[in-house]
Length: 271
Image (cartoon, rainbow, N blue to C red; front, side, top):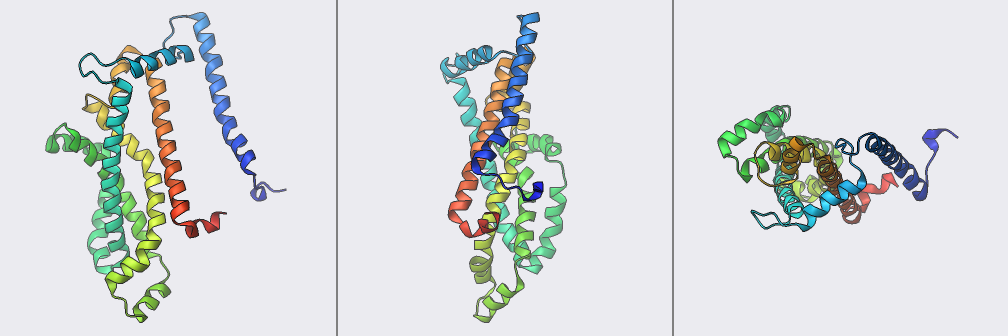
């Protein structure tokens, strides 16, 4: 049987997907044990027991200054920034994507601008945002929004622009105006694509969030990682990175499940 025709069962997919993760964990544990056997005070590859102790302290010991539990305070602050940034980007992507994709005059006016913004490295805008908006929450949220919104807008616009022309003609034949075509024809078909665009934007959004928190912040997952790096505190850095990855995976799973539940027709071809 050719591999291209080999369809795995759900159980086999779980095994195939979990095997590389288990292999990496085993390699890490073996290497960490060997390093600690040679140097018990090694900080580069901490043992699971050391990471568990460090994270337990952050989970249970309040910060002397703020009184908050550090781990959960960092998580809440980062998720708030990420949620607001992605929310703003999603709103812009939906509105502008529909207008650019459906209306040729709007496409001619705004498409070059969106394309120009999309090719600018968002991290290069960080100093400008800090100068213009200050070092507070606004600049961090705007960085996330600017970083992911243009790409999302282009994706939605391209999807709407590629809708079958027959659908537009039929709607016009039934007397629909431009606004009704956008709302009743383009919008329902753009929603599954919007969720897919959010899923693809999660990774870059986390990058922009961590970058902003590392440069100017006093709380957050990115702030904590860059704060403890000066002490070579890998027993904190590795669990924090793993926690960020877990949060991103959970968000992706929730979005995928939401798309399948709300728009099952959009996933028929993948079954």
